[in-house]
Each structure stands twice: as C-alpha cells, then as structure tokens.
Length: 400
Image (tube, rainbow, N blue to C red; front, side):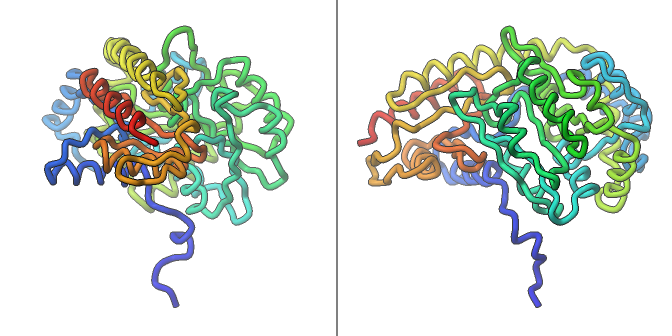
C-alpha cells in the first residue's frame, strides 16, 4: 500500500515558487542573480496599516477569532464590495481566509466531486489546475492566444461547457499576462454563462486596483446581476496594499457556499491571523492614497520593460492592462542555441539558460499553460528592471 495519497500524485509543486527559491539559493552562493519570478510588490506595507497591526497587538487582539473572520472585517469587506463593485453582501455571505489561495481552495474542496469539470482560461495562474485536481475535479483548459490579447472568446467558452462543468475560474487582470477583460468582452462571456445554469463563476480579482490607462476593471456579477447567486467574488489585500506576507484573502457569495467553505476552513487552518485581520480592516477603510502612488510606479516600470523587451529580435511583448507582469512571446527564438550550447527547444529551456548564463530568473510559459512565452514580474526597482532587461537583450542577441 503506497504511503502518499493518490491525489498528491496528480499535482506538482508551484513552478514560480521553485524558481524564486532557486534564485535565492544562487544569490546566497554569491551569484548576482536578478529575480523577476515572484508575484510580489517590492513596496513596503503602508504605515497606517502597520500601525493598525501594532495597535491590535497592544490591545491584546491576539486570540482565536471566528474560523472565517472577525465581524468588523466582514463588514469592511461588504462596504468595499458595495463601494468599488456595486455588489451588495451581508457579513454572512463573506469568508476570510489565509490568503487568496486558501479562499479558492476552500471553495473547490467544498464543491467538487470526481468527474466535475472546471474551465480555466490559459494562460492561467499556476495553482488553478492543481487545486482543482487536489479537490478531485478535472481542469478543462481553454487557450487565449497572443492574437486575442490572451483572452478567451464567448465561442470558446460555449464549446468548453459540458453537463459536467461546475465552475469557470475567471481572472482579470490576469496573472501571468496582465490582460484585462473590458466590459463588452466580459458581457459576451456572461451571456454564455446565463444559458448554462449549472456553471458557477469563481472570480480572482486580486489585481482589481492595479489597472492602467483607460482600462476600467469590472467583475462578472457586476456586469451580469443574473449571475449573483452563483458567483463567488474573490479578492484580497496582498497585491493592492503590498501585504503578501500578511496572508489575508476574502470572498463573498451565496450563504450556503460560504457556510460550506467555513466548514472546510474550520477543520484545516481555522482563523486567519487575528493581527492581520485588524490590519486589513484599516487597509480597506483607511486612506487609499497608496494605491494611486504604486500604480504610477508600475505604469512607469511596465513601459520600461515592454520597450526594452520589444527591442529584441524574436521577442514580442504585448502591453498589459494591469497587474505587474508581462508575458512576452519568444516564438522567434525557438530553435536557436545559447553560447553555452543549450538548445532553445522550448520556453523552459530558454528560462533555464537565461538563469544559468545571464543570471536572470523568470518563469517559463509552459507553467502557465501557454507557450512559447515567459513571465516577467516588474515589481522591482527601475534600475533593477533596466539591468535585467539589458541582460535579457544581451542573452537573446547571443543566441545562434
């Protein structure tokens, strides 16, 4: 009898975490490695949020809380959804978890049975398919291509739906591409979903506030109120407020689903960190100036990276609508050979050679379900990004 579970054999470790860890190990060994693989703002958490956490500690708010969040935070989340998205929820419809990942995982664990299908547009965040598999479901990948701005069409969604489809996981702006669905594009998708009442929608709105230019964020239940009763609208504070290590994600949806998610969480982690919860109350209710300040920096960095990568022969880098990633195509580099003799047969070979020969860590496109590409996180200083892109330019120019 095998010791490890069969479900574990269906998944693999997170490629982005693995590459980030490797880059850290190489730096510790003395290599001058620039890491562009982590999806983490390089800014510090705003002072008012840190002060709220310190205040919570000083006031002794360090005990267990309700399994899925304190009532004060749930009320703040309800206010946020009303203010930003025009969505009305009550605290009984809100779940708070240890990061956005736990929220998504709880929902899948609470709802999936063997044979249930979950539609996942590609490129996708690396964890979506494996979380579905761990929960016993079957990922159904629908590819958005470079030519469609990495977005899927209504026709593709219609063709992917079967009687076994239970969820669509929807992420906009996207990790890894930064592509965002505009209102008319999202309406076309929600029109399809309205014809299939068995399909629920799980949104990942983590990059809601990191949108640029004339792009306006919208979420499915906001665009199509008819989906309200079968939508789990998920979000968190990690990206918008530079609170990745605080580990707070949240979601709102039908009471029955939230109760089921609460049951899963009560028998796994129980409550998120009490101090982080009070800090999140301040993040959602306090001054929002930080968001605009960080956006200005991200726009500048995006433009720098897109410009430098598009100067490379064989690389095509679209301009993203939001988040802090670019997802350039290296179709023109496939088949070449690096100075050290590595054949660039695919994007994984490219990423490995780039790290080994140019000391730049990126994540290969196959990890996100669409090749040949790689993901760059531009959540780093301008000088760091400029040097990293210079190294990428030099490495690509050396390929023969």
